[in-house]
Length: 126
Image 1 (cartoon, one colour):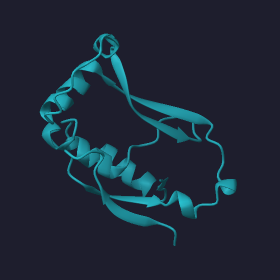
Image 2: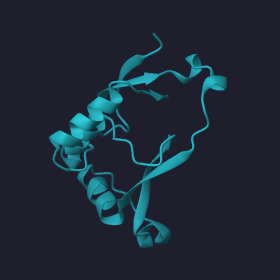
Image 3: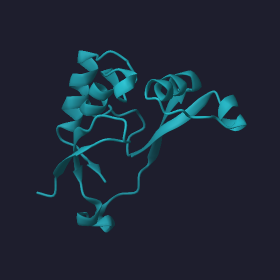
Image 4: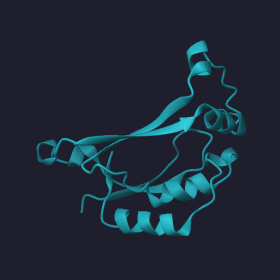
């Protein structure tokens, strides 16, 4: 099987979590379809600031960043015209406090099980 796992943190201040993926160097790009849609994940300026402050990032903002009401935190390529569930580990990470890299949003069991049901038969290429 091409499916791999590894512990990964998105930055040095987050807790590493177990992820599943297909290594891009082992996937034949010619067999991959071109995504039909891009799903943009946006956070409000206030949420981004709260998370940066909680992780002691000491970020200073440019005038442009300071006036932007939203920030793009993720761009997901996909083939359906609706939002696919976030990965279960992302839902768990989000339920962690902001100090650990989460958004502080409580875990919703129904949404988590929907994510599990989808991602149990899917994986990212990275």
